[in-house]
Image (cartoon, rainbow, N blue to C red; front, side, top):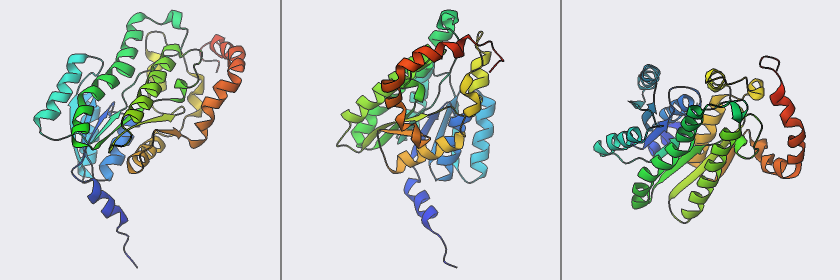
Length: 277
């Protein structure tokens, strides 16, 4: 039987490259870390929950990977600077930045505490912009690197109950698209991945935060592994945007052609009592 060496060649090609993954302690971040670690990349895993990070890094390292952890709250500027300074001191260039950290909340925006709104803005947008601004100049200087931002179809369909969340993901859409166009012609890439609902702890977390409610799309979630696979695909074949699943690529046309229908039906979903979905 002929031995398949393709996986070995792939791992060799990515060996020594460093990927920084934020929000790596669970969900899409953890699945992405496992996927990239299995492909031979070195990993810097960033998140607030140190115990979960340590378990994940141990799992990856026991499987022959190379993962380090850095406990940090990317909602805080000083913490983002600490992440960058820690990596810089190691004198290792960041080849891949996966801006995955994000938080959600479902309910009327009028009921959303400002503290929750501010944290969402800081994590979902400021952290992405700041970390990208710190790492991108080095990528450009080397003419090598890839920034992948984890967006959402909510960025293309502003919906009831996720007013601010949709806005933060719309920011990522515009920001990434502009970066992608600025970097054309170089070997530095900026991409955004736009998944639909994903079956992770995201929904439970959103519900627990300051009076949040159950999100109707929770039962339709895809696997975090599928998103991680698409992120790996983006690294192998850089593109501006990838939808997960692929058929969600119709989303921009849905909003343009049927936004009026959402205007009529959307509010009815939000008016349902928690637990009635």
